[in-house]
Length: 137
Image (tube, rainbow, N blue to C red; front, side, top):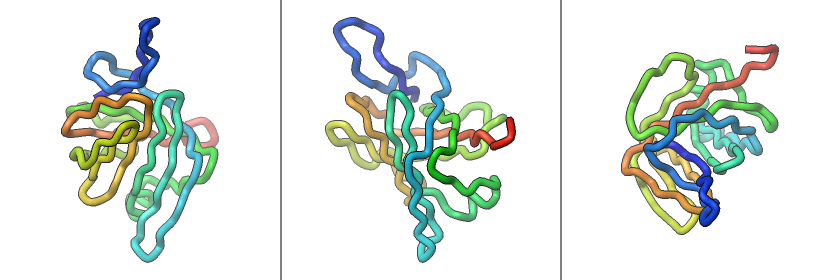
């Protein structure tokens, strides 16, 4: 599943499709840490979509990333599992809920909510995240 912005003059809506493969750059806009549950909730924003993602603190520790507001990440949505090379975190989720401008997936009980003007969700989602390390990598 990919997120892209329609280029037709009649529709500028956000949609998710199998048409285009592209990586989006997103910025961390908020971080909430729930120590009692050992979960961090990360809010991300790109030009096309806003994402709220719950991740276990253990996974963040394993990749060496403690997200803070302003961090940059590469993000890609797919409807199938593909090459994992170059990605720090890859999650597989199932469609949980569809609302007018919001789609929620469950990654083994952890939630990921996508917000956009027109989302056409698939039943299964792979989320790929690549952390842009400070200092050039």
